[in-house]
Length: 306
Length: 259
Image (cartoon, rainbow over all chains, first blue to last red):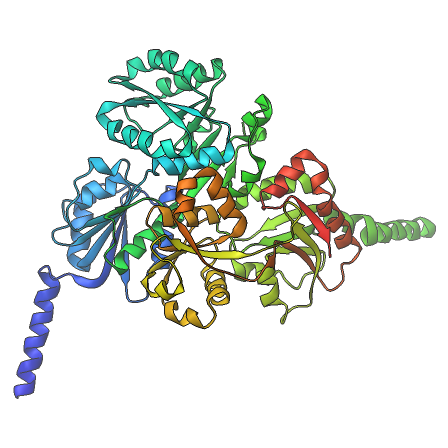
């Protein structure tokens, strides 16, 4: 009789725990901004593969959902995860509202410093460190000494200051031009381009405000026979000679690693890189580059792809 | 009429036994898998190598990012297998693979892998303080290299986390940026780091070296037949042309040497 009573209590307590916020330590909810984006899908796949067998996961793909808030809330209630892993800014902004005391992981969130992060938030930044970017530039174009950046103080003042400090050690000089509005891009380019060997396009929503400005940047640089180095491979089609960005698979593996122990840094730099080289442009303009670096290339844009 | 029918059937027989079978036969294929690198460059390799090979005849390049799928192709004739020497050694017991060509880079055919750690880890007595090792290879490859470098000391870190990155230079920079305490890398890549980021290079300590292993090798099942020999010649001649020399560099090689 006593035994039956104990069992009853245990069953009732388990039910209450699962219903009212006692999160399950081995459950992870992956919230993906869009599973259709190749990089996000790769990120999620590597994350799942890198998880140890002790973890169970469920996934919510936000793309195409009519009411993502409801779906997420429902899933959090039924699954009761201890960790929510967000891929992309959209997923992070949404999950943040329902996270409560759970651990929140993120990756692929553009400019994470703009996001609200608390003591239980950890992540992998979308952006590489300036010295990481410059090391790869040097690897392909060792003769480059002066690099130009146009940036907005609102979003990138800190990044540019950090870049200038870090890059001194690489014997590269950063020459920068700050703007407040995208309408100032043209004059900034005319001021900057004659002073530099290459233009470095960084992730800046003011500078890269719209497609017309992007086209203008690449046209002006080409007219002044200056190459463009970009933070994302989407700019290769506009005429960037090289782009280096984070490798989504590595980021997924890194995020899984953040579950295993308390990391030394709350937000880690991406450990893996994707390199795209515009071989079509290199051949057309006979641009001198370090051919030994070819073994590091992920994608190559050939003239047949134009 | 009878004569015409006989002639017609004889003609058909000739067509099916020689010309047509050649037309519809599977092209001679180079199968590629490299567990020492995780660069997701298979689409680019396929495009560039097929472009070179198709100009030479009915040949194709088939890269794999999955070891099991690559190994499923291992009993085929009319095939050349492009693989790492570490993988070759693990396969030798199961398959009669024979190396035909050794990949070269700057006149060398072998390379050593190095285990290096952040400055604070001065020697192997501090091995236990390492929690994450970055490496570009598959988990099995990285652990095998660690065993080779550390010998019996490997036991001290057998449960360590391996952070898989696309290439050696990423592994070395992962130490510099604090995502790993140590990295496995080819010796040559350390020289690279010294050139492109001397500050990060200075922050590294060498903890040990692996044995010297061949770079990529090209192998066939048993002795190469006529078609395979022709394709091996085509592969060997890649450095003769500027464009195909560049394609070969995508694999980290600048030439071949006959074994």
